[in-house]
Length: 533
Image 1 (cartoon, rainbow, N blue to C red):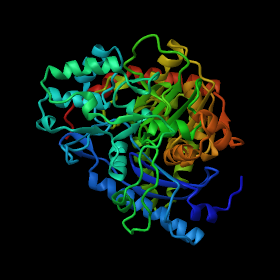
Image 2 (image 1 turned 45 degrees about the vertical axis):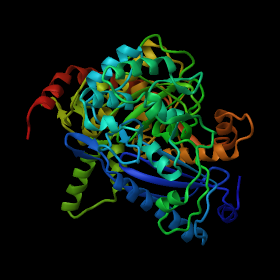
Image 3 (image 1 turned 135 degrees about the vertical axis):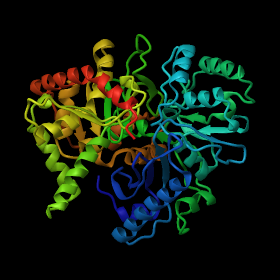
């Protein structure tokens, strides 16, 4: 549907999605047809401080303001209009983690991100207590650790939220999160779209043993499903987003979501038997279930769609970080040789080289673990390359091994879901940095998981676009219209994409790689435990 873009911007028939990803904060403005009108971005990195991965809150606002400023400038340059009003706004960010505040809204300790793997004991105890897998990165596990360790701030704790919940609160004054985001804090009852009441009671009983002055309901954000209005942009919030002062307050905001929920939305994977795989700094795959799993799996998280449907997630902490490091090294070599290449062209060259490598990577085994990896039982990781000296060491096999290493932990977790639980999966959509080079990551992922993998033309827009769609759904849905129907009829009708079928040779080669990968895991554990400093 062609629209008058200038009129849509002038009249505020738009939606703004902002997502705080692991390495980039991005803002996307969409029109009534949900196609992007403008975007802005800001690069940032997590910090390892006092043994914990964190982002500083001042960097949060510097990044958001920079991304919004870039988007507003693109609107001005492209359409000749200052951006003064938006129809709806949505905020998303990396899920999970621990961001505690006191009654005055002061931060009580550094934000602890999903990347930290320090809550192993708490994760195990809560999983046993609740009969529900509580991964290490979940907010409940981090809270339990702080309580068990007697951290001084626990007595002052008035509000525990996630990064998306925090930003939304600062913009609106509302202490809420979307149901998909809440599912990364504590187990959700899909029938009520709220925290599981019986499990919350068990959690409160365990907390009471440590004499804390609050209950879970006192400090956790309220849960809202997609489509609900979750507050309005305050004058203070408008200034936080746009220090230039042009953006008008009063704009409605939809419930803030995590990157899992925006990934499902951006790939039209919110209905049963659909799934998606997001591959960037971390990698995770999600399958919307028709029925509950037969038992608890430590390797499989149970989360929800933005409307509360149960979703099985296999989440791995590291995906492309080591791969990116190798690409940077090759870029440095080319620059030193006087033949530099554009970053995107170098990625395309090296990724396509991987397709020409041996399906089993020529005997190379690579580990990309920058941190611990619960799916593999690794408390700590070390990037590591092992090869068989009698076999040729080629660039094609090296790059194929890097891509295979990025997928291997996911494959190990997905085997539990697809082979042991026989979860029905009609389609799997890929999005994220691993799929930017056309066809390569898609083809290798299809072979690795032995499932057809589709990539849509809109996949490059990713989570912030998905968040903008959720904001537009809140603003424009018809009474009683489900998110599934809205996506099918209003967003993805006639959408273009490509589908890669599993190649038997790729599947057999990847199976050989994973076999060696599993056999050499003791070497990875030894490297992680060694003092190499």
